Structure formats: C-alpha cells, structure tokens
Image 1 (cartoon, rainbow, N blue to C red):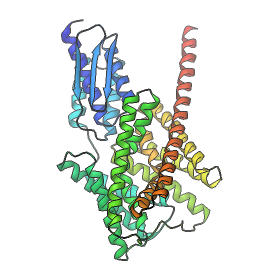
Image 2: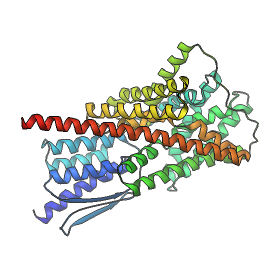
Image 3: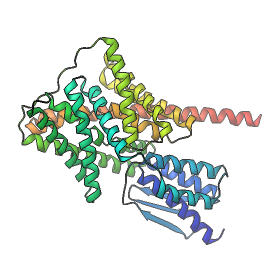
Image 4: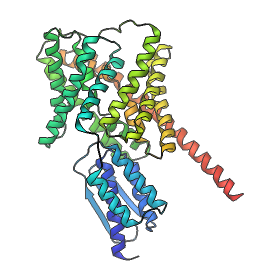
Length: 419
C-alpha cells in the first residue's frame, strides 16, 4: 500500500470526522465512522484520537499521521445523517473511495438546510408549546406572546454569532433580550406572568445537544470529550442564567410568579400534552436541521417520552422516577427508529429529550440568585442536577437494552449462518 493512497484515505477520514464534529455528532460516532471508512479502504489498524477542537488520524506502525483543527461547532443533524449514509454505502461497496471523498466535499459545501424563516417560525412553535408543558398553565396572553420571545432569542443569538467570535456571548445577550421583553410586556399590562414568558423564550437556547453528547460520550468511555462537552453545557446554561439574572436584578422583583396550572378537564389535559409535546419536539427538530423525513418520528419520540413522564408524575411514582422512565422511553424508541430508518440515533433522541429538560426548576434557581435567595438557589440547583442524573440513567439503561438486543441478534444470525 503506497504512501499516496494512505494519504488519500486519511484525508477522507479527516473530512468525514470534521464534518461530524462541526455538525454536533457524538465523539464515539465520529471515531466509529472514521474506523469504518479506514478499514473498508484497506487500512487494517487505524488509530483515531478525537476532541471537540481537534482530530488526529493515523495508522499503527506507519509514519503517516494527519490532523485537523475544528474551530466552529454548530448543529446540523442533516449533515451527520448524510455522512453516516455515505459511510454505509462505502462499506457496502456501492461507491468508491473517490466518490466518497467527493460526496463528503458536497456535504460540506452544499447540504440543504431549512430556511431561516421556517426556523424562526419553528422557534415560535416550540417556545409556545413547551412553555405550556413546562410551566403547567394555558394562559392565552402568555401563549400568544411567548412565541415572540422565542423568536427574539433565536434571532439575537444568530445575530451575535454572525458578527462576533466570543463564545457564549450570544446566549447572554439573547437571554437578556428575552428577560427585557418579558418585563416590558408585564409593565404594559399585556401579560401577567413574566416568568412564563422567560421560560418559554429561553427554551431555544437550552444546551440539550451538549448535554446529550456529553452523557453519551461518557457512557462510551470518552472521558475527556464527555467532561469537555459537559463543561460547555454548564457554561452555556450559566450564560443563559447570567443574562436573565442581570436583567431581573435591575428591574425589581415583583413582576409576577409562576402560577399554578389552569384547571382543565382530564381529557383536555391529555390532548394538550400529546399535541404540544409532539409539536414542540418537531419545532426543535427543524431548528437543528433534522432530515425532513425524520420529523414525524422525532415528534412521536418526544411525545412518548413526555407522556410517560406526565403519566408517571400524575400516578404518584415521583418526579425522579418519571424523568428516568421518560428518558428511557425516548432512548428505546430512538434506537428502534435509528435501526429501522438507517439513521444515527442522535437524529431522534436530541429533539425528543427537549420537553424533559428541567427548564422551570433551573429558571427558579436563577431567579433566587437574582433576588438574593442563595440557599434556595443551591437547593434548586441540586434538584436540577438530580433530574439530569435521572435522565442520564434512563438513557444509559436504554443503551444497555439496545446493546443486549444487538448482541442477541448477532448471535442468532451467526448460529443460523453456521447451520
């Protein structure tokens, strides 16, 4: 195997890995994809070392090593899916190495995305629907105004990212815009519940992808990457909270509180929870550029996870167990859809987990910081950590079940083939 061919293979591997990291893929999937491409290209012993900011690829007992830096990380799950599909086609010998290289270049340059205006409208949809689920109330004034807060947050976040390279600044400014809008609406007597507007408005900024990837990388043994992405999620959450707390600190504290749920007949509550969890998940899926054909499956995954959680809390099983069961349901259904649709599991579980994110509890902790209730803020922050741990355990159990079924299926076909 000559040096030029090895260079081409490693360069192709680097391109695939870089696209996936930039698009929000889990690190273990990046390494699996690179290993898959390298081995199918004839490199028997590839070596991969990946981090969120850099990628190294080489071959054992071979002097050639290539590396690349990753400066920009966004969320585009359509690109992750397309790289995964090309890797599968190359492994099945449907395309050549040259065609794989050209296909990766095409993905990097010309992958279609949902239009900016559709993403803005989807942000409005997810803000309104998930606000109702998170806050537990259906008030017409807040329900009509919170889409504007969500659109302002999304637009401010994109605008700051376009003109600055300062990490996390966009989340600070976007959350400040949302908080200022909520206060203005209350002072103009157009709304009564400032907190509901803020919770709904900042939902598009929640670092759900970073949290999920951190957990999955930790479960896969990628400790360095898992911790790094966990810190990124923590700093993002702190930036969002800092922006909101800053505005609240200088605006006064008597601006409304999270009210109790508006009474509705049980049948209407069930209908609202089913419909809004589905629509909110689909809205977030559009924002992160999930493949269009996967949108209904994402919505169904999010709806099932939320309904399992909602039924659990209303049946007296406890909030922590309800979060665990909801995450487990999302994880199992995402694995099923990933296998049947031949797509990465991240396509389905990232949008589906958003309804379960403990946004209200996190916001209440932020508000306590703003008004000086440090002890209560610590208690609420600890609650958020416990909820996150429950969600993590739910996903871990779903992964264990997925691996067990894969192992059983593999053994079955192996024995059948030998017979």
